[in-house]
Image (cartoon, rainbow, N blue to C red; front, top):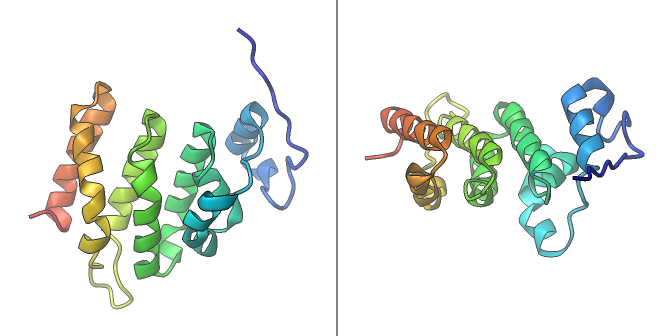
Length: 170
């Protein structure tokens, strides 16, 4: 078994600031920097770029699962500092792809983001109406109840119970 190591010329640069994030730096050394957004992916990622920045969007839409997982975690970190209604729409768009990811780590990061976005509040502190934005995502989440991975199945069930208690499932 051969392990290919890609070293980015940007390690520690202002663009990624990987010097301050050892986990991101380690992932970057293993799989290289996230590829640039091009074509249809760039169009799909526009909202994510506007709200969370180019680097995060490149990670979320990367071909490498390590980048996708890290990108979703960064979106989660920045979620509450973004305008709520716009953030819910962008998270809905991001999660259309991420909740369908075959990699359990990426799916779990997307599920955590989904849970957090469902609890967003508007500017006056009331729960944000996210039903219309998240309706298309529910079949993706429910489908994971039949996943062979016990952790994915159990966390999905817990997330659905949690969501039913605080938001839009009737």
